[in-house]
Length: 329
Image 1: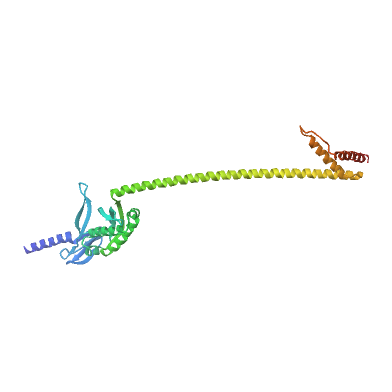
Image 2 (image 1 turned 120 degrees about the vertical axis):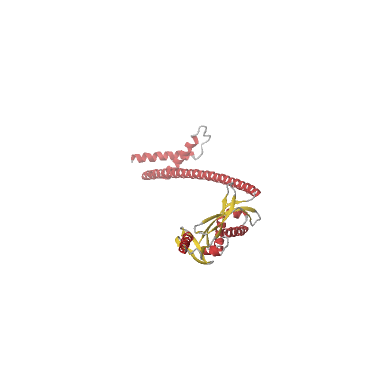
């Protein structure tokens, strides 16, 4: 009988030890083991053996938001023996925050964090998710309180960076690493939204008017530059044409002058050979040309003959004699 009782006790002990003493820890999980109420060791992934009577896993309070059947979000709390070492995402509910210019806005955020030291996460804080949520809310109020509404709406990256730095430093003693903080929505009051929309429309209209004015200004400048360039080209062309005409006339006059000089030289040489006076010949030729111009017009009439004309006639006679003498010679 006593032997039978001993066998039963041994079997009971084996069953209890197998169910509670043999612990299989999954990858990316861990367990904090206490011996007689005091921290003893941290279990790693794989098969681990603990003494059920004197050792047990320390439970950790955990809270997370979940959606019910009616679509309403609520917070669910439970105790965990196994601590998840993977990165966790915590969705914080909307909260009212006051900006520097006293505008009340609604903000909700996402927090990505990871437990890096399970011992600190268990012993340094009572409820880790709740503590992180409250710390995030107060930090967010402080950060937004330093910015006005326009800066808050346009500086999400700056706000995210500040929140991450502050939360990461504050949660380090809890064995938590804050990897990212993301603001999901920033909702100002309805009247502020309407005012902002009006401001945006006015700003767009102003930019459109400025662009249109700049376009018209540029078009007028281009037209003026085109007219200016056209006038310059016309002036350059006219100038060039006048220069070419003047050069042509000068060259023609030079040719005529050279021809006249050559003719005078030859006549002078011919008259000089006959012993005559070349100046008398030249004066007579000029008189003849002048008389020709006087009577060449349609309505020109010779009313009188100047006294000097007799001298011209005598000069013509002298020219005749000189030419005859040149022919004979």
